[in-house]
Amino acid sequence: MDPITNPYAPGAGQRPPELAGRDEQLAAFDVVLERVARGRPERSLVLTGLRGVGKTVLLNALRGTAVRKGWGTGKLEARPDQGLRRPLAGALHQAVRELGHRDADSVDHVLGVIKSFAHRDAAAGARLKDQWNPGIDAPAVRGRADSGDIEIDLVELFTDLGGLAADVGKGVAVFIDEMQDLGADDVSALCAACHELSQSGLPVIVVGAGLPHLPAVLSASKSYSERLFRYQRIDRLTREAADRALAAPAAEEDAEFEPDALAAMYDATGGYPYFIQAYGKVVWDLAPRSPITAADVAVGAPEAESELAVGFFGSRYERATPGERDYLMAMAEVAAAADPDGEAVPTADVAAALGKKPQSLSPARDSLLKKGLIYSGERGRIAFTVPHFGRYLRERG
Image (cartoon, rainbow, N blue to C red; front, side, top):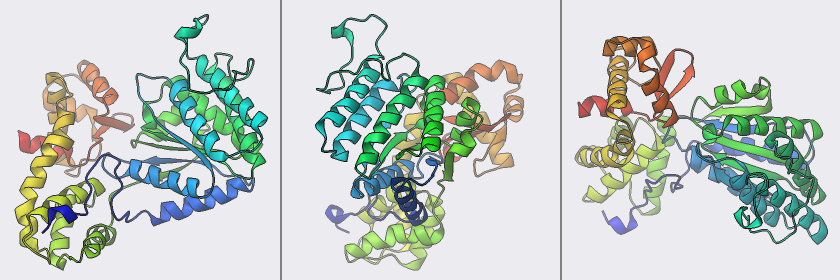
């Protein structure tokens, strides 16, 4: 097959040629946008799932939907070593520009509030040259979103932003990837701001994406967060959707998969979107001709697995210390005995496998949680954030 026409796109956050299996989420978001724009009550949205299920791709697709409807949008990726003010200010600056409000004074006021919000990221009394500049020409608005209390400031900022959007009959959507990496104060402030918005009816929503334990992170911050957000679990694709993700792009290039080949691909990938793209790319390049057969899949699978072992699995494994790797391997062994698909396993069983007391393993477990290699959806149980990671570890030995 011609590698130049290879349609598959295995990349972090890279949109696949066929966004299969997400029609329900896209349709539901259309309803959310229309309701919010009309001033009707609607909750913000949180997408959760393992690595490689396409959360970032879906987040970008939802943002595209909002842009096409004339909304102002901004996106940021949360990082554990960075506060919310700077990236959010940049995202909201873009959102205001996209809104296209014609009253320059109103726009300058909101931009000035964003600037004040961003400047509070600097230490109190910091000189002007030490303050981060979000690239906003409008003068900072003193006394608005600049108290230094992130919760108060975010409520004021979203309130002014929502008023600007309401003037033009549109809305503002803030998209936050890796939302579980927000600091505790920032999570609390975000929940408080969303709570205020839900009561005021202003057209501003937050769309977050993160690992499966994100709902627990939000709930720990504000007890009412479970009512603030509409949670959608993004999982592996069904067999039908996975087949479409492979077959539709191939058909665009006048190629096809035999039914047995599609079945073999699903068995190999487990229906995970990133794996589908990774296997699809390798198998296409190695297949001699169309239609692609199950034998072609068998030939390409080892190379695809080798590439995943280096780029997808290996890069994460290398971030762990020797002690943390022992912990990960023990998790994989416990999962193999109790739950081969890699769902949550008891921390006590992991400690028993290592022959140590659970308390002595807390530092390794906490470090792995911070590195995003494992997550804890419920007390006393842990799981890998990456599908098939346990299998990778066991094969690695």
